[in-house]
Amino acid sequence: MKDHLPLLILLLPFLAAPLMALVPSALRRVLALAVFAAGFYMELTALPVLLAQGGWHYNLGGWAPPWGIELVLTPFTLFLAGLGWLVGLGAWFYGLPFWVLHRGEGKKEGAFYAFLFLLSGTFLGFLTVRDLFSLYLLLQLSVAAGALLLALGQGRGWLDAFRFLLWGSAGSSFFLLAVFFLYASTGTFHLGDILAQIFIAKNAALVTTAGCCLALGLSQPLLFPSLPVFRSLLERTPAFLLGLLVSLWTRGAVYLAFTFLFFTLNLPSYAPPKGIVLCEYSLVVVFLALFVLAIRQKDLLKALGHLGTAQLGVLFAGFLLGNKAALTGALMDLSSQVLVMAGFFFAAGMLRSTPGALPFSRLAGLGRHQPLMGLSLVIFAASVAGVPPTGGSFGKWYLVQGALEKKDWVLLASLAASVLFGLFYFVKWTVLLYEHRSVSGSLLYPSKASQVFLFLLALTVLLLGLFHQAIIHDLIEPALPKAFQDLPIPNVPFLGKEVE
Amino acid sequence: LIYRGILLLPGLAGLFLLLSSRNLAKKAVGLLLFQASILLLWFSLSGVHGGFANPVPLAIADSIAIALCALAILLYLLLMAIHRQYGTFEEEALEGKEER
Image 1: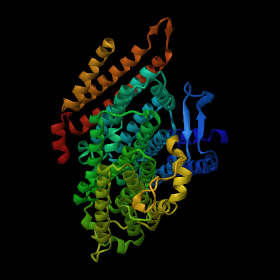
Image 2: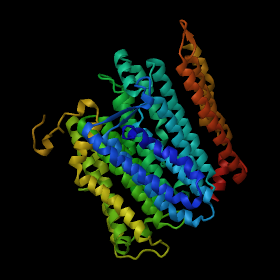
Image 3: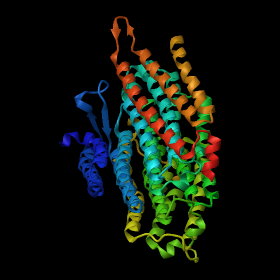
Image 4: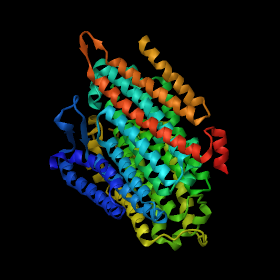
């Protein structure tokens, strides 16, 4: 049984999803909890093997790639999968009051758990599957699951669900077009084999075309929920659902982009056309500029919506820099973003009783009345701003090192500006939470249990920072492209050491 | 190449419909047209070349066709629900009703 752990880890949520719709409502919540427990147990069982081996390549049905479908589990993907399960558990936990309010809608609750597990399963698939066509199917499935979750969460949110499905599917059509181009040119679906074939043929045009199509394919997950078509989605959707989507779906797509950029389309000596480079830099700067938009918002949910997308700019800056320090920083920041964005949205959900706006003015002095929650929110903001010792701070530290090493002043200036905006946001946020004004009466007072779970997420963000060396050495380094795996993190003059 | 380019024409028409139309039903039709044209591209890969037929693209095309049918059904169900709730597919009218 242990030999098949990579497959079992991936299959578990997909098997649990139909079960959720079938079991009696009394059993449903317990069963969901049991599935989460089983997921954590399997990941803990696989971790020692992965730490010893550095990676686990599993051939589905015994068919070796490129003929068969390969699942690749690295210590980092397993770790990210664990964080994903934690966020999924959070969505289940913070969704409970919602379903208590909607008592008597047992079938809807069952469907909600089913789609929650489907979405979690597609996230695990993004992390482990190395087959291009399967990834297309997973992307399309995640779009459908996300749309149905929105429809269920909003009660009658058909319009948002339709828009989500329409634009998400349009994106996955471009992804399918990229799959077509790559298969037609290389004759294979296996990501590693595609790279080998591209390398043999030195097909730079294919890399450019497929890269553009893949970028379009992933555009909706990456821009969600900042897209103008989702004008009132933030106000109407339960925040725990937004947290789930922004954390798992969006960050899963970022990891997918990382896999494509560095394990599939990473043609050595490939110099992208100047127009594409300009687009890449512009996109990163536009993403980072969303920090300004986030600061200008007067509503917490709208600010979080922009903040979620703005932080992707930090990750893409790392991918664009492409050296070891930058990629290490990007993956480190990705791990903390999974927790931070989920935590922020879960907290927002606890503070508003019904979907609607949540102005910042209503949060004044919250930290003094709800110390655990206040502290958690400050830790999340510290991670976004890059204040040590949070996970986000070390991520940004390595990213800045990467920019210095590459002498990329445009990205360095953009990163520095985003960190400054983040710091401004952090100070403003902390002052607001602890200022001597009482919380508005219309604000909910969350239970101790819900605050404890939020604090657990915040504590994990802190632990990411405190144990960053072990995380980078044991988890992130084996997940980097092979060329970077045995190199030390470069020393730069900025740190008073020699340049290597 | 020309033959495959011709196969993409309905897809381009679908893409135009998806991006330019202000009617949700037409947008859905545009999306399905676009996906259907990509499906045709996959079928085009599965022809017999030099006495050898590659079954993989055909199997892939079948899988895409199933996903396309499921997507069409889901879009249709959501469109029906929108029409029941708002009585229209026109985006201007829907935006007005949403704001109210």
